[in-house]
Amino acid sequence: MTSILSGAEGTRRAKLISFIRADHRYVLLGTSAIAALGMVLSSQPRPALSFLAGAYTLEVAMYYLLVAWVALSVVALVFKLAAWKTYVRVSPFTRPAVARALRYGSYVVCAITALLAVDRIGCGLASAWAVATTAQSRPTSTLESMLFMLYNSRAIFFSGFKTTVALAVFGTVIAFFLALLLVFLRMQVIDRSDNDFVRFWKVVGSGFARVYSTVVRGTPMMVQAMIIFFGVFGLFKMTNLTTTQINAIWSTFTAGLVTIVLNSTAYMMEVLRGGIESVDAGQTEAARSLGLSQWEAMRTVVFPQGVKFAIPGLSNELVINIKDSSVLSVIGTFDLMFATTTVGGIYYAKFEAALVTSVIYLCLTMFASWLLGRLANRLNVKSVKLGSTSNQPVNVEER
Image 1 (cartoon, helix red, strand yellow):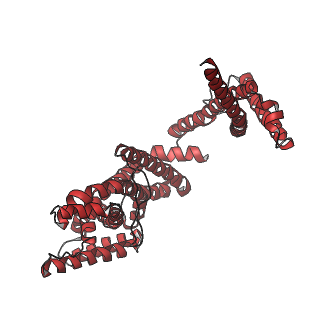
Image 2 (cartoon, one colour; image 1 turned 180 degrees about the vertical axis):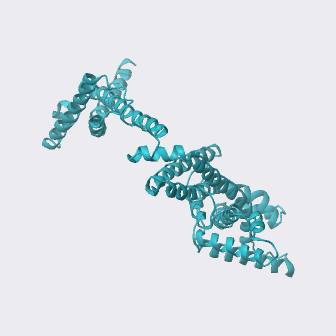
């Protein structure tokens, strides 16, 4: 029994040693890049609020520790090139004690680089913010100029931010329910028990859904927005209403919301179709064999599973709408893009205004992606690409 345990322990130790020997190369390779980044950060000028400003000696010591680590990585690389096949056996870096020391050293390198990043980047942002919030005119530095515009035009940016979020969220939710209706029409199949009236409306409904999907997905949202806004506005002009009254009824926000709803409905319909078609056909046949009608089988058996499979693609439409809503500024919708144009025109600095807006969009889409990823995990579905621009079925697999 003792020999068996000792043999198992020896095997475990051998595997551990083999892992340490193989893994140290990746430790040196990865952390040498981190050390180089730390050296670059250390070479940057200290910001006004730097907490390392009074610790010059400490920073010099950290800098040379990073240099030593990069030099050590170069030496290890030379050993590897010189003894490519016998490296694990002859190199001093593969010894367990040395490999363990290298791992601990990598932690030190990461800590030093993190400290320098906080000092140069974090404190640099804080210093730039302090300058931007107290400046009387726009600073010349790009970062300070961006923060100055963000701070002094925060009301404009916030108004555009609220509009963008409202358009994306409400547009996606409304489009989901319309897509449920259209996908039901899209997948109608003539049943033997259907009379001529039902057969006619099934053919019409399915044809309408196909044509709608083809037209909407085949034209840009910007063009759709212009057609919807100016087309409906022209219809109102045929009445006795004044332009002010028409704008009160048919605002740019309403037109933008309608555009997003109609556009997203077409894409979400195809996503739902893909999810529904991924459900095993045998389940539909089993439901029909139990006496359920085509509508009852779809509603109680196929639809619930298909919607679950399509959730990742449906939720991804929210992220798409957050970004694509920027084209609605062409009809005057006061979203983030319109706010960017406004602020850029005020300060004659469209480049800096665009950088501010890009950061806002990035943070917004990253938060939405994280939130929707949590939803997908909670519903136990895999985040896979759904939807198609063709009429081919879309395969969706459950985790």
